[in-house]
Image 1 (cartoon, helix red, strand yellow):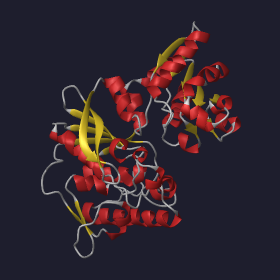
Image 2 (cartoon, rainbow, N blue to C red):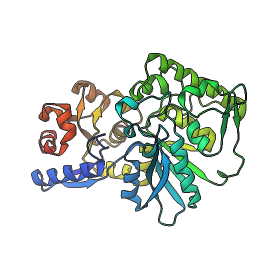
Image 3 (tube, rainbow, N blue to C red):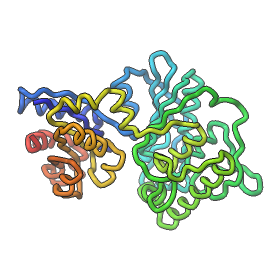
Image 4 (cartoon, rainbow, N blue to C red):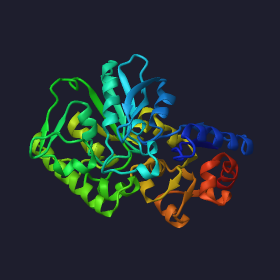
Length: 369
């Protein structure tokens, strides 16, 4: 029997590389004749950089930058051995995990720190920059990142604005960078969700509440992104309202499209192509994937949703091990998950399965196989 392991991280609990090692160890103990291959996954969000290093042998780099509330920090990213390519995770400088719960406020947070990391990579000589944009604390449409790279945003009086969510609706003019800093730099942006830039299914309505926004602020942020899109039409001659990936990371996808001229790709697609995972899925009998919390969003551009499509194409069985879920097995079967088990079944609580996932993986592996 050929088993392919391709889980995402369990967010806030365990990374996908460690998860693969533990699952493979449990399979070897109970099913020594099974042939197992591990391909830890990431969709462009938290953990993207470590996965890039795992597959491509990149080296660590650090940039002096700021967090989403503009406090000075150092952020790590990856550079290719020859220095020509940089792999940056937005969450490293602009991530929700950098803030305490009571600091979450997408009206005030900014992607400026991610722009500083990009600037650091350019100064080191990188010409190809790959940016993973999941896990953000921001809803600023990428204006913070753009501000760090030389763009200036003005209000109706011609005064410069702080690049954060609450000022989106006040932008009436964009001043282009004075230098040709971005010339000849090629950007690829890996996104993890496929929501539109604004609207009821857009960045603000779907994701701003988990970043700390109340109902009134969600409406204000949504109007801000709509207003920004109108300014894009004025200065760049195009809208990103429904561009694939535009609503990812609080509109960062749309901002990268316009300000960087970036190519936007689903993060999982980029990784599958890079490691030729499709061929591995075709040759396997079973693929075991998973993530921390399985819900409807897991099937909309994230790892599990993409692997379900790949498994169906090749007639490969797909099993999922996750931390927890509110979905029932009948609905999961209909979506393409053949078997499913949650660590919370054995731990008794979500908190315990998050804190100590390794204690319950043995039970999960035995049950699912």
